[in-house]
Image (tube, rainbow over all chains, first blue to last red; front, side):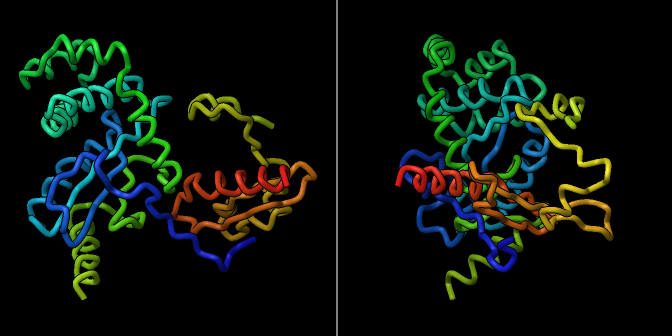
Length: 185
Length: 83
């Protein structure tokens, strides 16, 4: 067995144009989360990441990619497509937040309600959900995750390396700050 | 051989081996048994059509290794078959 060789799981798809990004492009550290809107652990991570973002400010860039566990979570795929549909109308992050703040109500009627509350073009939103316009985008996210060693949700990558440690606010901040320091030398 | 309940519960689409009686016999044959804990290692094996181990990986017990290594191994295996 290849016991000596230690594999480091790395992000295979670099952060780019296709991504949903918060924070400056020249941030010292980039946190990529692969998440599922119906997954309770991702729900726990949601306020933690907000706190970490607040704490690190412009030093941090945050990227969210979809990793819906459709076998376990019947609403996860629709919710992911809803966030993308909102994104097509310039409202990805507000929808992202609404989904995580309402994880127990991700049925189609609720999704349409969130779209309304964000003053989206609801007709377009509904039509794109029905047509699964963003299914391939979500699938692309998912496969990039599988290829990068995503092993559950949420899985986080710090400057492209899978973060296998705990992700409570303190541990995550510590990991991110340590990486930021390495980069600035 | 197949713990159906577990399989259904975790929604797996492939058979699982319980490796129960004699306990851990298969894991031992792969060198992946942990006698002190009475459990197995987090070890991955890709076996080719001749039944030979083509690729293997031992993950720390606390770390789920993910599927990326398996996919890479399968791809390089199918390339070998073509060549």
